[in-house]
Image (tube, rainbow, N blue to C red; front, side, top):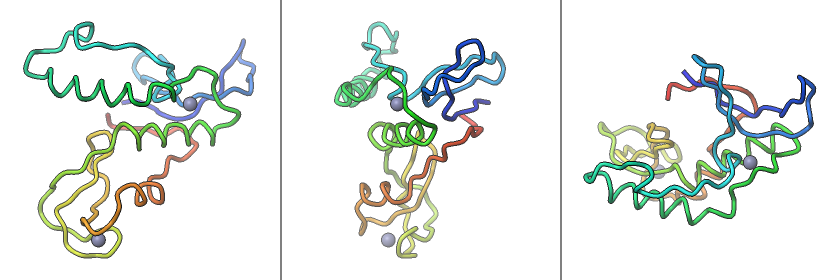
Length: 153
Ligand SMILES: [Zn+2]
Ligand SMILES: [Zn+2]
């Protein structure tokens, strides 16, 4: 299990007033910044040791990642809320996909039955029929609380 959330940088356990969005590996206790807060790291298909079958998908993902290169940073944020907003932006830019997820269930916006599902980090998140703009919907409904939360990924 991982514990994600905004954490303040520490110097000998004294808060420095600089916040990053982070992950903590529960088993090892290792804490590190994730999303745009991790800073830009140059990945390529070859140094990631990708299997030939996965190459097209990975190349597509690397291209998408590169599109947002300028948003990666190591300067941190002034508070937990700003760090949470940063991770929210990262998710919207990089981790959203739309697919079919039967059976039909009510659309979040208009209650019309739909198979269309919005995935965040590959996890089923919201039903949304094709009458609504995904971008507007996410701006309104995707909320990242500025607290530490457990994730199953
Ligand atoms: Zn950030
Ligand atoms: Zn709808």
